[in-house]
Image (cartoon, rainbow, N blue to C red; front, side):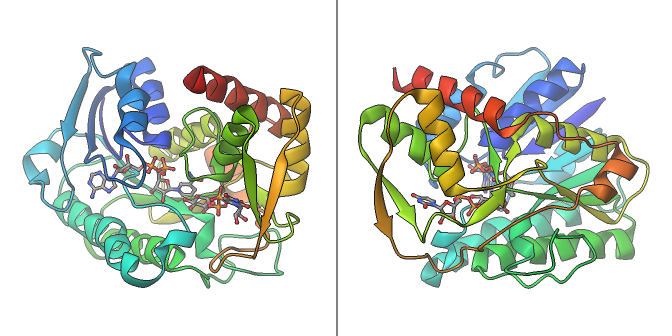
Amino acid sequence: MKSLITGVAGFIGSHLAEKLLSLGHQVVGIDKFLNNYPRDFKERNHAGFKSHPDFLFLEEDLLRLDLGALLRDVDYVFHLAALPGVRASWGAEFARYSENNIMATQLLLEACKSLPLRKVVYASSSSVYGDTDDLPMREEGMTRPVSPYGVSKLAAEHLCYLYWKGYGVPTASLRFFSVYGPRQRPDMFFHILMRAVLRGEPVPLYDDGEQSRDFTFCSDIVDGLTAAAFYPGSGEVFNLGGGTEASLLTVISMVENISGRRANLQRHDRQRGDVRRTQASTERARTRLGYIPRVGLAQGLALEWEWIQSIEG
Ligand code: NAD
Ligand code: UGA
């Protein structure tokens, strides 16, 4: 089996590559080292498997790459490359979100037309839902993003559906809910919190800390990605959540317990584009993909804390 991963040097892409290599796949990984966070993190993410005999790394931009030849003998495509980050997506930055999240997806799907691919799995986002009282969020529920990032992820999800409908490209879109664990991006809250606690620095806390997320551990997301690839149906959307909604204040106190240190909170206003709550219905993923999140918040936070100590050490 041969798989292609876009965004392979990123947080989730690097975990996925490790799993696919362990399953015996040949893996081609593409990443352009976008400057959304320092290159050092991404180099470290894929250092452990960069020299694996079944892995080929290409430092390339999806917006410029001739994908035709690369895709010829590929069975599975995992499209994780994007410019992530909710709050930074306003204003002039939206051009970069449009290019890397929408345009890059359309170019990839064009290149996938009329190829005998088994599946193209797209990394969508809980941010497509926006703010809603209709909880838990169900795939057939309303999608009304409240950030430009969410709009870009939803647009690319629609493109995946269009290329399935129009050209039979066997796509599946997975809406990930706030992913955490070792290698988490340095712009995400758990990483910021743990780094600050370890260094004895202030923790910027937006809003009142009662905002909550259905936090999902990275290995559960990777299991959902492979399950969606091997699932026979196409053209569908699945939520991948962690199974427990928790507020930031709850997480902060859990991290204080794990670390044995106090968090020095520095309060800031609510940020434009932030949703108040997320909570995933994983019924569809459970019944069709056999998806069951296995890592609870306490265990997952302890694993991320261990990792933060290792990189800060
Ligand atoms: P990440 O930034 O760590 O990884 C994305 C990688 O894609 C980066 O290494 C970047 O350099 C690369 N990339 C971006 N544009 C590219 C292009 N045009 N060509 C080649 N490479 C490019 O982010 P992540 O947190 O691992 O997220 C992976 C995917 O999952 C993204 O699509 C993101 O929108 C989605 N997602 C993430 C989360 C989360 O909580 N982390 C939640 C929902 C959805
Ligand atoms: C995360 C990812 O960053 C997105 O890429 C992804 O698409 C999204 O999940 C998703 O599930 O779809 P988010 O939940 O906003 O987005 O994750 P964080 O950036 O870690 O923020 C979580 C909460 O912490 C937010 O309420 C934010 O305002 C807060 N926060 C963040 C702080 O209080 N302080 C900070 O310094 C950073």
